[in-house]
Length: 357
Length: 253
Image (tube, rainbow over all chains, first blue to last red; front, side, top):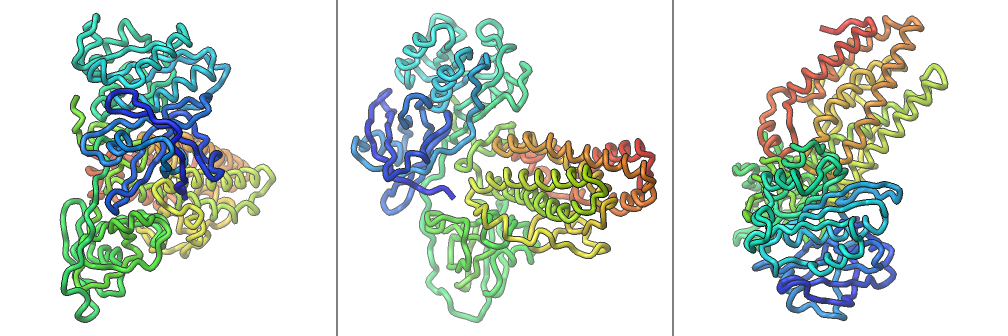
């Protein structure tokens, strides 16, 4: 299983008013583990008021820049991104897991492919990593980037993209689509929708020559673009997605233990929520929550029944259970109240668990 | 921009998820189950087939059987690694179950699974020699290809990509079975083949699951299924029928 490593912050700079670019240096000999593939992301963790938060941010550096760099845009009410934008400074230590993700295709120096990237707002970070790496390592490749933003002043990496256009003259084409700022060409104003893509494919982008498309942005934008690409003959294997949901999980409340814990007999009343409905069952305290649910004809998810695979994960909202084995959940998940229901035996006379959280 | 779309409506509209961080809990559970079913079936299938290698009548047959064992184990590993992204302990998982165990040949378990792992019911029946293994591989090979084609369009991109890599490999296994059948017929083993086909036909058919599954709709909304169990089974029956007829074998009624 992937582990967290310490990284030192060696540079922090703003790319726009509410987004920072953070350069990181692995310490304690972990450099090799952070040898990323273009388009991958890092998952960070940090304690906020005693509660661990994890957030994933894409690497924006290219393979040949020799640095590890992520872009972090501040999200309203987002504890981690606000902290990164306002407090993080050079010399700080931050923890992250080695790079993960499959938002890339294999490179081939002899290939002469045409790549098409779509990025919405901060979704540009992995696409930037891909286009820098690809243009450097595939000398015959062309890259077209359609980059959607609210207005000119929210375009991350705007100058860097201009520099890249000059560096890779004729091979990199960037089309900015701005939601609110008017541009010379009407087509370049508004949202990147399925219809907008169809228009772009008429005169601006030769979709027939496109080998692979990369899309990273908010959900509706990804759906519209993917539909347009399929309409124009690309199959699923040619379309690569990266989605970072706008709503990453918020802070979880601690589970509460009801006052009259552990008293009578060996029976427990368990309220089990699954697929939106709750069923209350009675089970002996030597039966796992999972088996109790299955015996009562609830379609609880499970696979290994050995605490290994984590398919049967659920959250304890009230009461206490004991997990006899756990090879799958991490400490922070356990702290939030998650248990493996196949290994969880009730300790209190009532428990409330939820498979929907 | 309407950025407040829920993950559920995004999925219902055909959206694709790309990493464990934004996968909703119920989706996660169904996805894990699906992956466990594949991994367990491949590991159990490979383990069962390993014993058959030595029963191969010639070196070509033994090579084919060994290749199938190797590649099915490899395919299990590809999907197990994706389960690992969700926290599963892959090393422990691979050794968690006795993959070689089988029930009695005449056990009647329908579509149910054993208590301990998620292998498809069909992988609980023991293989009975070379002819039997070829017949099983012929029928199940087609079923696997149909299932994989369905799951290659699944809404979890890393798994869809793994299945797109795996599908041609499993397709080749089914072709090896067809080549084995041709050879057996040349050698006059038609009657034994027919008996084995009769044994495996209903058991492979049952591997498509219950036709009254209540989950189909919600799985469809999550982008984890496109066709129903019954539709996939019908597709298999049609393909397997054509296949058997091309060999001059009877289709069990």
